[in-house]
Length: 181
View (cartoon, rainbow, N blue to C red):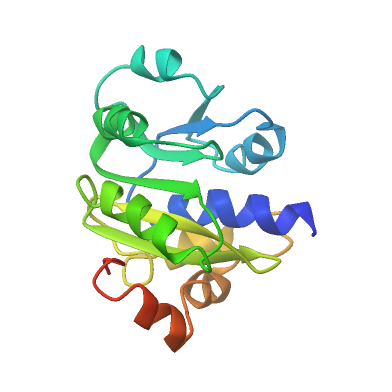
C-alpha cells in the first residue's frame, strides 16, 4: 500500500474535523510519517509517545485536541485517553478488520462510554480506522477550507474525507446499534 494514503487519512480526517486543533498526540512505535503529516499544520504542536500506559497516564488532563493511536488498547487505555482529551476532541485508532464483527463490537462498546460519535472509515488498501469524537461529526463538521487548502497532499481532500465514511449495507447491518453517528 502507498504509505502516504494511510498517513494522510490517519492525520487529516481528525484534524479537519476538529474545530481549532492545537495539540495532537500520536501514540505509535513508528510515528515518523504521521509526524510529517501533522507538521503540515503550522499552529499545531504534536507529541509522540510509545504505547506505554505509564507514559500516557503521566500526561496532563484535558490537554489534547486530537489523539491518534496505532497501538492495541483496552479499557484502561481508553480511560486514560478520555482523561487527556479536551471536551470536544477526536480520537482515531486502528482496529481489527470490520469482518471481525464481535471483536469490533466489544471495542466500540468500550469506546461508547467516552464518545458521542464512533464511526469506521476507510484508510486505504481495504483497511479502516475508528473515528471517535466527543463533539464534532466527521462528515457534517468537516472544515472544508482546512481540508482543501493544505499543501503537499497526495491523496486527502474534502471529497475523500466524506467518502471515507461510506460503508456498505452489510457493514451497517452487522454494526447496527453499535456504530454511533
